[in-house]
Amino acid sequence: MGPKHSHHEKKEKKSSNNNKNFGLGERPKMPPESDLPPALPAKPPPARPTALPQIPFPAHDHKPPVPPPRRADSSLAPPVPAHSNSFSDLSRHPSATSTKSAPSLCSPRPHSSSSHSNSGSLQCMHGDPEEKMLIVESRFLAQTRDEISVEEGDVLYLIEQSNSEWWYVSNKNRQVKGHVPKSHVVFAEVREPWFAGNISSIMAEQRVMQPGLPLGTFLIRENIKKGTFVLTVRTSDYEPPKAYTIYRNHNGLEMRDTNGTVIINFSSLLQLVKHFSCEKQPGEVQIYTKLTRAAPRLEEHAEYATMRRWQVNRNEVKMVKTIGSGQFGEVHLAKWRSIDVAVKMLKPDQMKQLANTQFLEEAKTLTKLMHPNVICLLAVCAIDQPFLIITEYMKNGSLLAWLHALAKKLPDFLLMNQETVTKNVMIGASIAAQVAAGMDYLSANQIVHRDLAARNVLVGEISSNGIPSVKVADFGLARKTDKSSRNYVMKTDNDMPVKWMAPEAFRDQIFNQKTDVRSYGILLWEIGTLGKTPYRGWDVERTFERLEDGFVLLRPDMVPEYVYEDAFRLCVHLDPSKRPTFDRLLKYFDGINSDSLTASKGVSRH
Image (cartoon, rainbow, N blue to C red; front, side):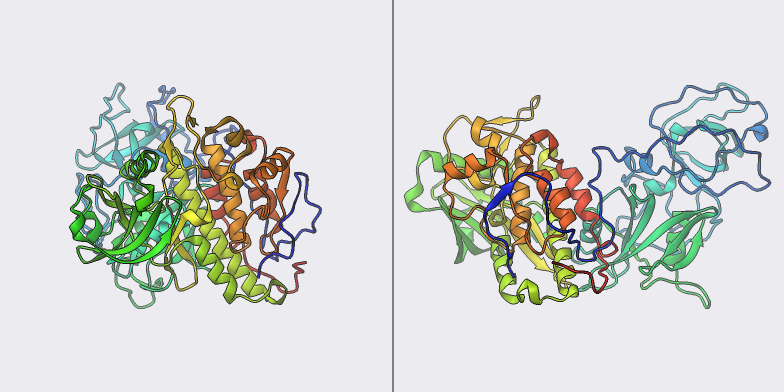
């Protein structure tokens, strides 16, 4: 089902192809470098209402405010309008994903903080769902009569958001009421283990679908871009988790199912979780599965975690078969303490200093990495030769081989129906998002990969809807960048993957995140063509000359026009400053989901 275009290239100019989005919904936007919402214009204070507005998640600052003028009579202070449009501060707060001790949703409301159980399991709780619980983040000493002093960890209840800097609260344990700076408190939700903050939908699914977790495992993530929350729930061990979007309304929150139908209204996330963690009562609205426990953070598989000791006896490793081969080494499926592992070993004729150094550099890099979309190192044998690198085993091999196998199963593109096209675009977007997540992690840790390509991405489990779990691998050329310049300068001549390299890296031997982004762009083209070779038939000199001249690969048939223009062409832009970051790419492809890919019949694809 490969592309109908040739592998020749064209000048980097606006594509003249017709707009072929395959009826995939509204064109997504590449997110800006910052997702901060625009500041609201100043408004005159509204008249005091007879009933206080329900404000589930007001924004909060991180630094103590300069106290504004306040009135001694707190009842005269005007409330903040209920329709704040910023959730962003919540996820960026240092405690937004903390699991430190905090009042538990699933036990009677205490007058002081209590700890969550280690299991993360939920029990039904009774209490006033309309009260909004706050946790004190830092000590505050009252300076006027209408303020109250608080200590870190105190539990307060919000009475009124008196103005933009001070909140009127109640300390029930001390039976006092008064103002506190809003910068010193957070809503209890952000301290709950099920509140994940601003993570991607890919990460949310991976967390709730970790092996060994029960049905009903869940988390709530924040979608800053859309100003909503999403409840992700494990409802099956084999199907993808279900997602419910939570919107704000004038009374608080409303929850909708995947069809956009309003299920029920709540005043807060705590009340929502409490409701859906209890047994269904006659006439009550419920979701597919009762909420049972908060999804833990992603960790190593238990079998692997106990064995993460770098140097091991090579006699413990039993080779099963060769599953791959490269310039310097071979990869074997092996058994290590009854576990399937992948073992990378140098070829006997490659035991030279350069190969050994590069091999050990890869092992050294892997010891510092831990991310769900980066291959996991388990052990090394680096005392005696041949050196071995032992990693987790990815059962479906390289992404390149997986794409080739998929191409053989699919009909020619001209014969595909709309459903098949949409499904494969979804699969490609998920792969792109996962790779971007892994590369964003590497970039944050100042590591430049330098060899990102479909051959160096590995495929693990395949979900029931055909979407694979993928991880960035093969760190033989990866290096740590300079702390100040965030560049790596190559000092020796190594064999490099020229067709995936950025022109400036080939010319100047300088590598950084933006050179990796260029390689990522070629990887996107590989995904779109189901594994075809870029610039086929061109030698190194011709490839470099044409790239310097501004030529880019043509759009594959299966790639929507907007993805080609907004993602691929930006990634391979000659000007590195015009290329997006991996963080932006992750958000872009994570946003291409089932909602935006709802295909409408009759839309021309040619």
